[in-house]
Image (cartoon, rainbow, N blue to C red; front, side, top):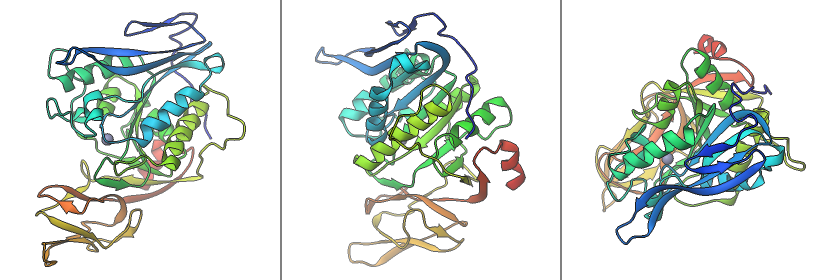
Amino acid sequence: MTVLKGSSMRNEDLKLKVAGLEVEPGQKKKGWLTLGSRPDGTPLGIPLVVINGAKPGPRLALIAGVHGDEYDCCEGLRRFLSDVDPAGLTGAIVATPQANPTAFENFSRHNPVDHLDLNRSFPGNPDGFLTDRVADALTTHIMGEADYLLDMHSGGMTLGLIPFVGFDDTPGETGEKSFKLAQSTGIETLYAAVPFKNVLRLIAAEKGVASILVEIGSEGRMREDLAEQARMTLTGVAHRLGMIPAFENRTLPYTDNHTIVRAAKTGEFLHAPTGGFLLHKVALGQTVAAGDVLGEIVDPFGEQLHEIHAPHGGLIGEMRTVPATRIGDWTYAVLPVAGTVPTGSDLQALRSMA
Ligand SMILES: [Zn+2]
């Protein structure tokens, strides 16, 4: 496995200051990114963890919980942050394990205060709606001066998914680093996604921060094995960046080959043309051919209203696991498989394959 080298040494012999939290080399501190007060006067903030390594090195930004109904990565990130010993850390980690406080307390994808999707609101605005302010705080303080960024998600209340990593498939150094970072997760399926507008990863790429989207877990629950997968994914990434030693008695996630999926357009989700009760004909991770029946939407009497077909071949990366389906809801994401590349390959190998 390639060890990624950090591109900056910003915390050399210096304390790290993040949103008023001052952290000496070799220290780990917790605090809050303060947003202001709720109507009842209690404070509203984003939890913040800063670990300043004893030795200078790259800065790694870690975010989980941009959507308030995705839990596996929040818990996996908390466990990883607890694992890291600042005395043995090279570089620095700036993280939030629960990025969207009001969405979290409402177990909702969207922020219930302004009904906005934080993951379509970056880089944010310090003078805008609450979601704009949360986005601005994450961009300014958590991403900040990072060299690497992991934005960790799950399927939320309505979706099941196979673990995958979205990377920045653009020519140049940032794209190349993003691809290497994606490989360092040890997750098999890597997604050359066409990002939605205003996602954090696009803002990161504009600023030259190598970033990836990590998707682990789903369906509005927290599964112990998936939280552990998220924890070990982070451990593998930090180790391969040269930031932490390997833990004894723990095997880092690794794969010899990566399956590359390449979206033809943003999303790849099929939207339901009508409401009803969704019945599946396929399973998560299954490979399908163009035209295959994926599922059907039936009415309350069981009469078929619509049959959903695969628009192209690929694997079922995500699917709606709540049967109640409304007009326009996401149903299936068929991810077109471009091929496989050996771990350690570069973007050039990817291009010649596609
Ligand atoms: Zn999400």
